Length: 426
Image 1 (cartoon, rainbow, N blue to C red):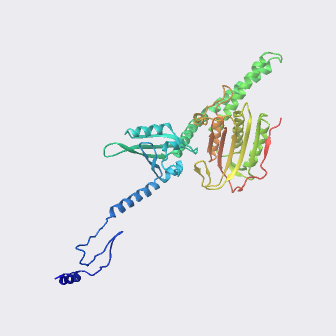
Image 2 (cartoon, one colour; image 1 turned 45 degrees about the vertical axis):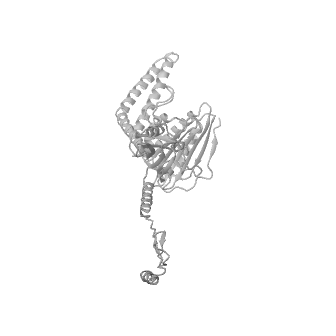
Image 3 (tube, helix red, strand yellow; image 1 turned 60 degrees about the horizontal axis):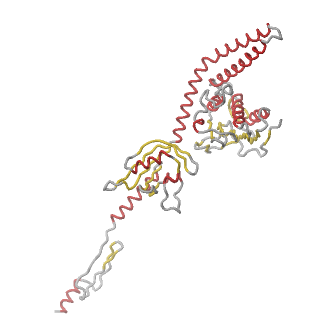
């Protein structure tokens, strides 16, 4: 009977059947009569693989989103996940710190408060600005949302930030252009009448001066009238330049030559404690109004020298070509252009002042020492020439005015090797 049972078993199964594979596990069938049964173990990993693939797809998708996305631990604010845009704004998470704290990467009181609010279970939506520890400033709009467990406990926070710095700058430039157009329309309607009134006052003062004796005490009063009238006529001229939008007198000209001409005049006007340094590329030609651009360089140069008083400092004027695709700040330029930079080491400006410096009649100078039209005129001239103007300044660190203008033809690649450095001597 034992032989029959063995023979029957031999007919049903081979002594060692081929190994059958199930993923990472395998099972072998044995026909030895000493084994009463065979155990096959199968591990189903399809669900795990599905979760891994889904997680990978989500991570890849979030890396393509042009917004900062991060998941934070609700307890200590450490970064559990961040996408590629996060790294571009705040830098790659530190490899030395496995749980880097999100609030250590920036300075922004509003966003810090929003995180605290989300920890309490209330989502936040808003707009603000921040400064990263790398020195980059961005304006953003975003949300901070709490993520709860099944029991309702906030275990993590989802942060989404969209960089709207360029949008805000464009809106500001648009509002500024609208202000300029409105003021230009107003000035164009009244400046000529204003000029006629000033002319009548000055003519009357001259006639009175001719009719009175040379030793009359009225000469002093008439001198004051003529002096103030002359300032009023200059103001009227500035308003007319500001309101003028015609390019009938545009002509191709050498901007380098014009800059040298302005600098020679500036050297006779700057105080002794101001050192003037110039770095000018040769042969840069543009299409525009030489008189207006002369006014731009002169105005910015004088403003810079005044900002460095009473201690003095260094005034630098640079003129250099920029190739197509180069960037100035966050803005790329598709065409070749020229960059005119006027920098000083003076008192600098805070953010509220920076936001208003191009407003007509806004000035930080004492009463009687400025009309507040100088930078407005500069802004209008630059915009009228198809360029743009960027200002960088901090209190105590001076100011830099960067003007980009389109070139008329291809400019040299490098700066003039014999760039000038001069110090005003009286």
